[in-house]
Length: 385
Ligand SMILES: *Cc1c(COP(=O)(O)O)cnc(C)c1O
Image (tube, rainbow, N blue to C red):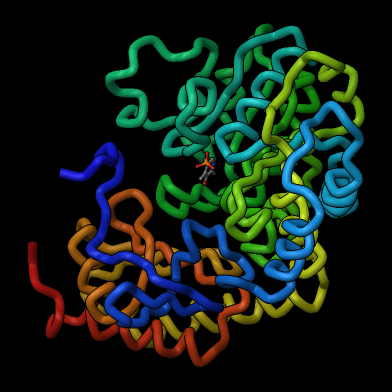
């Protein structure tokens, strides 16, 4: 027995060191990391610019509290607001916390408490974000949920219209559902949703915890849809592995989060901010983002060539370097076989192999990963469960 709670079903692998797209385990075996944490190390492991920013901050100071001005937070906030529809940033330490901040802000700013979210969504594990999550299995066993959430089918605009009432404060969605199964929002649906929000004075909240920070080839994935959300939440890739979260909102919501309304002791920690500044300076460059788009297209094209005729593969979809391979059966037994062959991947839902490689991945690494996937997914290596 270990001294750790068994909250995670862990694969048989412990990491010794990592660099770029490569992870080495404690036995010296190397792996291609097409999970990048869970979409966290967007610049790859130990990116030199992030490492340098962290080392330099380590030699200045580590923590001072939010009782004082913080120029590094100001810089990261500036980078976030100039690249989004938002004007004001609240820093915290994780995705779930960013969503808690969004839920609190939406309730406080509107004086209403209902929030519409979507089936198969994932917003986090604390009480507010867990209640926002449209998956029964995540609520199960924890007693009454925070009230006010209703879950409607994804991409169903009529269901949204029916769910709105006089107490509705906001609609919250992921434009590409990450954990729930790589489900992509239709452009028409998202644009209609924005109109409904405007008509009924509802806040539009986009959870970009997984899809943001260049993952889909834009700074944030909502930018593929030409909408202007009131609130955007971010975390995962924002500091390349140093814990951080951010809620970005429009200026009209500023006064609802006055002194004392919300706080986080570690929020905007200087080490996280130093890493975050290095990440955003890199990732929010046009040529970097164009490269992500190009590599994403290459990855999908290679996958289609190599595995679309494999019987259990039913679809290959995604945007940028967020790609899902939907299979006709549970894929939990495929992951250990891929690890055995030297490829780390993620799962979404139960039937989708999810690829979130570092955005710095190169074509050669993509080719290698595709070959390994083909080998494992073709009958010769797949052993049934
Ligand atoms: C991972 C994730 C979260 C939760 O983030 P944590 O940092 O684990 O709290 C919330 N929303 C989405 C879309 C996510 O992918």
